Length: 474
Image (tube, rainbow, N blue to C red; front, side, top):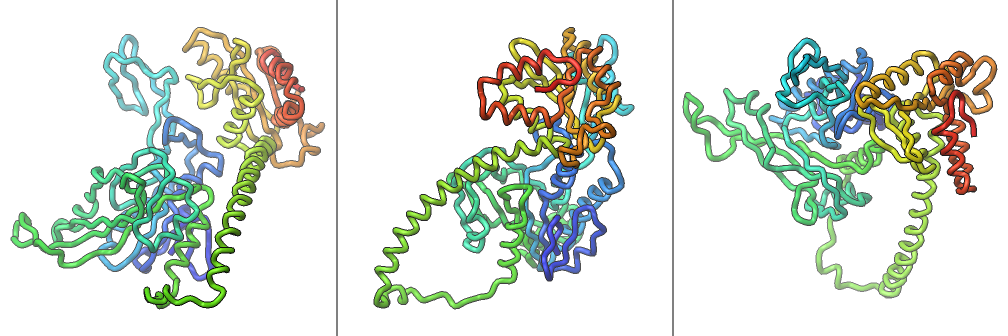
């Protein structure tokens, strides 16, 4: 059984948003848990809130189904791990996804009301944004054990279990390690407490250079109680449960190759390993071939390194084409990166999920929209409201700039026509009256391409961005 966005021949495959079968019917289960996050992020529903926290808008029945399935999987894994099953989980550190709730401060106090409940902050002032995140789902709610991760990066991965050498062969490093001291198996103890004293065994699959755990295999062990009051447990386990394997990923958006490796490992065939004495036998021509292979591998590594560098440069450059079709957080990040390339300084906003740019000492609050229609009054209205919030919070009447990717799925020649304007006439008029600049992402893309060929044009482009009112063209 595979829960992922991918499907493979001969494997029962499901997405996290689908109706799931009974997990107990399967002996091998693969969970693509990064898909829990990318299900929403690729749909443009998430916005950055804080580290490992995102806000989600307009929760629907499908979102509720994902949440329900996470809890269902956790419940079923606690049940089936008593038996001979293997659960492979492509793992990411826990992400909190929630809705934004406005905090209403009480006069002369540091407390506020969120959703009808009172949260006391003592003498501390509320965050200027006046928003808190109400948790909707945690991405690790599927997991039958609780273990924290520590965010840290490194290059060296030592594979302790040789069965996973192929899995880690393309990893260039690691992004976190497991805090073994935080491991908690309360779900097992609560479920089996009246029948078994549950302990566990932890096998190390991979570590970093200083033996911090990168990948682990968790195995529950079941001990009989020796008295009627369950105060004393046996010294040896009566039985050993299944395996829960937690494995890191290279890229949360491209997990299919890792799933394929696991499937090959599961379906693999056994060969008789050659005895040690075979290594002392030499066939004529074997040594020259080995030497030539060494030389050619060195040459190949040099070429591959150069090609990899060129491919990385091409990928970095081509990502800016996303200005022409992206929406949501990916579009916001691309706009931010493009403005930085043009020479603008990027600052966080204290009142929105967007950001502020600073050019020559002048600042502007940015609103980014990716739409399959024209920019509307609601879109520019949001920016006007945010400017008002900024004025209340800081006392500064900041300029506003709305950067819009309207009609984002149409070819460029079909956009900004008479019946498909990017910024309709009434929107342009409102913008001029409100000291708001309007920039189409197609214009921003063209400006980016121009400064790549003519870097001396940066200053003129930046001046137009920060000084322009209404529709800005370059």
